[in-house]
Image 1 (tube, one colour):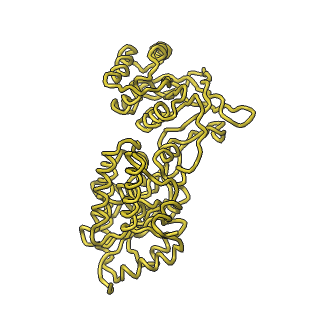
Image 2: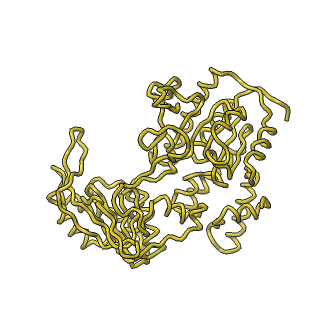
Length: 442
């Protein structure tokens, strides 16, 4: 291809935020190269949604295939920016703007004693494991018989479903600093394993915490609220017992002489009302120990601190006074020490706001970020480039197999045939090596 004039943008990450941003950019005439750490596109839409939601996942894949087939979009998988290529490399290659949509690849924990014991995991590891994302798919996770999940959102519900239906452990505890009125999971997500709720224990738990609920919170109403979720509960065929522990703040993870989890110490809390009407848990001074042998943190995520961008809390820092705002939101990466934006670098999705919303939210954030990038590009004007030559230069610079969209389609066909052969609803290779081999790239 001969050289052409236009805008050239690098999008880092191929989850919903990155893919929908690429579509918005390409639809306005920009040329976009998507760099993805994983071989397959999709991000959390591929590897974060519970594995048996086949129809939902395939619907999203169809949308992503259409995006990646657009003229002006190039997909390069198995490329880790920050390792294989740096941000400076991308600038030197001629990219005028860089949009970071890498998601929240870091993990959030509580900083309590015992977090390094065997049997302590982050929800992300487990979700990636059962969704067959390398290298998590290749690791063994020592899940015991009694598991505590810290957190009460939809990710907790996903992991509880896996523990109840697939692993069939003896006991699962969902641990919450607040009470039953503050749970964050959806009724339909809880329904997948609600039949396994230990109702007698639940009633005792409401009795145990009733005097520590916030003013105006009725314990009987709390009981009805949770039990109403059993109306559409499905049979699991599992003997696992599921229990809640409310108004309980993790204090320490206890270990045995072999360095493995043997218990979770929980501090009792009570709820007070803040001025904004929300509840706040405060310690009572008493505590108790939960007899468990596995602890899984499900308390949200943070961005990768080693990526090379300045941090602001759990996300990458954005310009407090954006030059290119979209709907009042700043997408421009900012250096707090120099008190200035990092020229041409933008951020969207969970990289901008970790753990905020699912595919629909990521899509809107990616599209808005693309509009911010387009505003910026208008200030710098078009550049000259040869896209085919650029791709070959990138492949040579990376130095290991790079996967294109055509190869992703071929891989999907191979896995679909393998699923049919095995009589499975879906099949995924568990390692990058297997995927690269069947593609003839190794």
